[in-house]
Image (tube, rainbow, N blue to C red):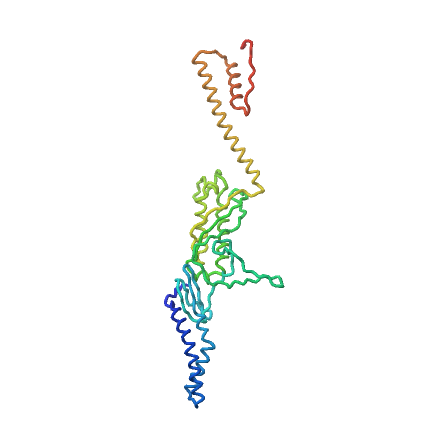
Length: 340
């Protein structure tokens, strides 16, 4: 269904003034027609009386067609079930009083900027049921809104459970599709965001892993959820956009707002990261210690300070490595006798 923009109905002020001025004229008409009827009146007097009374009683119906549209708002209108168009530009409109506004997502409140209320207007009756005292707004917001769904627990490509959440910035660009193509465009967007997030996250490992292809080209790469967050967010955005295009929704941006291992494996993964860090640190210490031992032996040989056989060199190397690689300060033993 194609969106129809109504632009020629921006005459609400003219209709309002005209219908208000008709009320005193109708009252005057009732008086004149009544006087004419008392004097024997004619058919025209009878008709004037009927029309004047009918307008006084039902003239307010014309006011039902007055619509005020603010900037970045839209109103989808139907007449007896048929879509007649959308009021999309700001202004004061008058349309057929029997037109009805359609917005199936008017009651839907998501965790997003456009649905945040500063105050609630709920009254609890004797039955304990909460009834909203606020009129339902059938207008569709065309502003940028941010949807922030709750955290999801998803397995990455290695099977590790992780918790992840995203924030999606979106807007309605086609009101006809948003209203008529899907049952509830807000719920539809929320569900498609969750589904797209699961599909993309399952492609990536949490951290860089070997022999993992995240691009689909058959070559292992270093893509990961933690290290390639910008790439992952763009893929999530594109995947959501493909799913919600039929609902007249445009995705502006998607960002990862929370990423962590699930609680049941968080402690184990922390130990793994600590062990990896310790191994890397030890490797660096050993490399440095070996270099220092080599330098010490070379300096001793160059300056002819002392001549050591192979057995004494091995003992010296062992002692230096213990001193340089130990976690605590060494406690030396001073030999007051001969070296041999």
